[in-house]
Image (cartoon, rainbow, N blue to C red):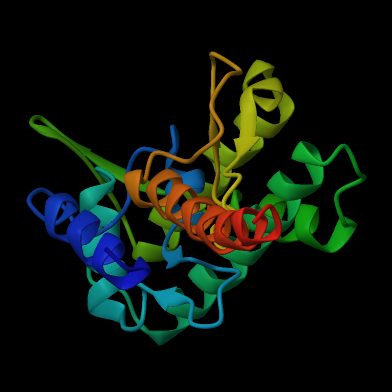
Length: 198
């Protein structure tokens, strides 16, 4: 099974409920995962259109009116800031001030309307503001110490790991893909080593 087969098999499983990874532990971490295999030669963009953003918000339990191009731009900037800060924390380096300002600014946009049956964010921008707010709460609270990053060099998804023992992100393809690479590497070495003993 090659890397693409692994990714396709995982996608087929995950799309039964949603085509977006939702197991990061918080909406802001799920937002990071809207770029799949971020550090590969061919990253997967899951928020290509405003319709994608609307679907992602619903999948994360964030009800809001349809988004526009400006909202999509905000989502991209917020996603980049969340990735930058979370990776800085995992690597024990100082997060860039620009990324902190982006999240803090977006978190100010949180207006919603309550109904007897629930609540709805007034705009998609407000829904994204709530995502930024969850990021601030995670980054300044005890969840900060639970952040972990997937060991797959092509992935890099940062997620919550309360156990402190996970090596891979919640996507099953990452661990499988890495084991396949390791197996291939061993297969190349072992015949060479064997021929040297003859």
